[in-house]
Image 1 (tube, rainbow, N blue to C red):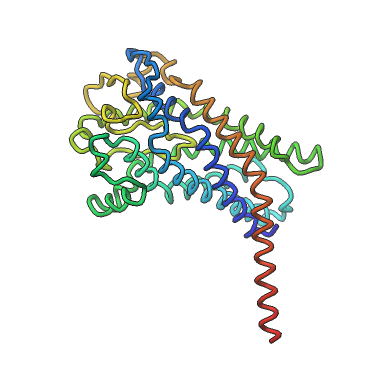
Image 2 (cartoon, helix red, strand yellow; image 1 turned 90 degrees about the horizontal axis):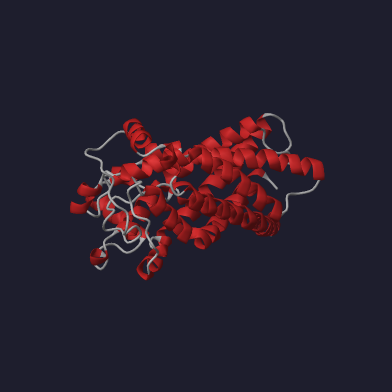
Length: 343
């Protein structure tokens, strides 16, 4: 495959794979959010019929977001990786080195975060809108984005971007592990990676990445809770941090916790004033214990591992078919161009 086609095929396959995996695991994202944000004094909630109905709140926007994010990420990851291999005179058939994987992941991660942050802003809004306000409020991603642009300006669409960029570390760890193990397997077996191999490697990489980055995600979720009072008076504002890619951190907590149908039973943490991240981390460690940083980890691991496994499995299946269609289309265009020139 050529560099351009390879990048496009991987982008499309990544987007479709992400869409499928998010659909299958979204209820676990919701449950993980609830467990993660709970303080040690919060009640152990039971799942009511109403809560079950709300497990898919915000799914439409999440699917748009994950598809766009994965397309951008995989496209630029493959594009950057191909460029790095070419600069080092390395065959495209060989895998990336650890350093190349980190660089490619960093470039792709930053670009995808910036490009899709407005979609995750909209995802947060759609997830936390009060039921009483849903009839008059924007009902889909595009409407929410246009409303924010009109009422608050373009800057609001990029609120929370800097904290979200820290989570680029998650896919960097995941794909570095994936690439190195993939290269090892392909070299030893002397054959292409199978979808099942990709499923296992993707799940393992996500396991390590989630464990490493989870404390930061938990603290970031708590920081969302600090905006409760402001967001209660303005339930559709964008002044607080927005959720980032749900594959990594859709569990970032909604602004208006009490009006969120997704998290109806979480008690407000006793935070007298808005704290910075370092101060909040200290208070959590002192008052609730180190284990609190891993609240909801089991659910998050289940969701993340399943999501990554599905993503890599379907991506490996889709990418070859996508590349075939792209190559066939290019050959058809070249043939048409040759015919026209001959005439």
